[in-house]
Amino acid sequence: MNRAILSQKINGELIDRLKNDPEAFSSFIQNQNDGIIIYVLEKLGRLENGYSKEPLLNLLNHVNENVRALSIKNLAKLGDINLLSTFSKYANTDESTFVRREAVSAIGRLRNEKAIPVLIDLLKDKDPKVVMQAIRGLLVFSYKENVISALKKLLNHPSELIREVINKEINGVQYQSKSQQKHDEFPEFLRNMDWEQKFLNKIVCGDSLLLLQEIPDKSIHLVITSPPYLQQRDYDGLGIGNENKVEEYIDNLLKIFNECVRITKDDGSIVFNLGDKYENGSLLMVPYKFAIEAIKTNPIKLVNIITWVKLNPTPRQFKKRLVNSTEPFFHFVKSDTYYYDIDSFMNYKKSLRSKNNVGNKIGKSYFELIEKSSLSEKEKQQAKKELLEVIQEVKSGKIESFRMKIRGMHSEPFGGQEGGRKIQLEKKGFTIIKILGNGLKKDVIECPVETIKGTKHPAIYPEYIIQELIKLLTRRDDIVLDPFVGSGTTAVAAKKLNRNYIGIDINPSYCKYAESRLKDISKENNLFELFI
Image (cartoon, rainbow, N blue to C red; front, side):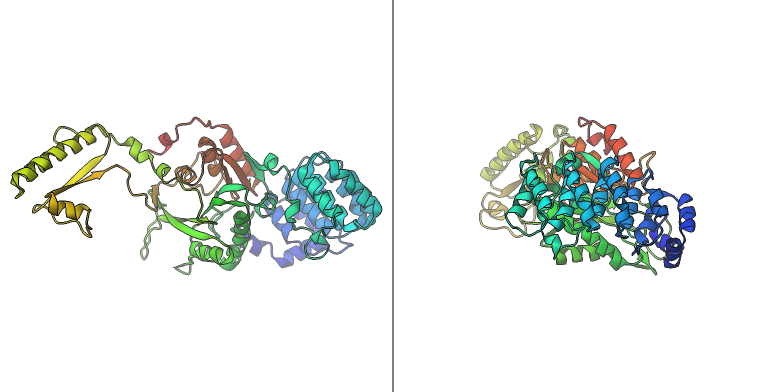
């Protein structure tokens, strides 16, 4: 269900009633899908100590890890030390790292010395992500000797990053969360260690804004994505795209984009594909408003707006406007050193040409024009000689084609300079223009809209376009990340092209589908047979 509709159905009045009536809350949740449950949990807002915990405690057994994590997050708002044992249980036993980290974070938020032994015990956890979260909780109590003693033991931890963090603390570097930084923010030196183990060549289910914060600066070669369009499709009420106002949508999108800029390498690229929306009969210019704000708020450059021309747009009949059949792909970079393999872009066209299918009549009309021209006999002989040579180059496949201009028979080349075609025409009486077959690489890609049998995702962008952009902007074994991976198209294209991929999506059903697509492909697939 679209969040615009959800916000009307589940308004503030209903949220308040659910908060104040535990039985109504439990009854309501039992009859709803995951998307609505998550929406309600996100909207609960501030909770006072004394709030009935039972509905949230019951949700801790929910199959959806996002529901469990949000339930813990809401329980943590109560600041109830009596919940310590509950948080400790899920910190130690939940199957989801995401939930375990949220539970450890909840323990830290208690800001109670009774939590110290639990946090110290969690420093022994095998999951370094849990250890990191426990460190964050303990640093609040770094004035206590037993805490310092426990942290010093991590100086021999197998994780280099954990050792670095502890060294910084022991050497007197202040941990920012004590004053300047909120507890939920992730300090630069506490970025998730072993991030590749969690993310690389995997589909990760969760909130992109939170998950991207776990990836270190300048780690990704290409971020390419198509975020949910504003109020265009039903994404089960999850994540971005369900905002009521354009400004809110762009603001939320920029939060993700800012993280994408941070994690992209200096020679990397960021590509965002966005669709527009009509309101009161007028286009809102959403993609372009986003691009302008992205440039204003980040040290980036917009290299191209690549236009996707849909060969099979949705067949609609409008009496006073044309059918929309294009969408922009914005290509951003952080520096002038970005990687760019122009020769690989759209090069399949060149490979499909039959260079030897030229026949015996090639150049015949030029021989006839030479004879009819006012060139001298010497000039005619030289023209025929060079014409025969260039015809042989075409037949051998060295060049694709050629054009010939003859003085008095053709117009002079426009803008010719000394030593160029114009001067050759004047002095030799002719000029030959060789066409190598490297066509102009334009900022337009024509491609049909794709549909994939069995997918629940409402909007799939073409794998063909993503393949072309991946070839253009990355090398073999580079890392390609999509923070809104949806049905998995970016990851599929990256895998086929022997690139590493990272796919993130908040919708568990999309994540499962993307994983199933990845299992069914082989890197040796013939890429072009799908599109030509």
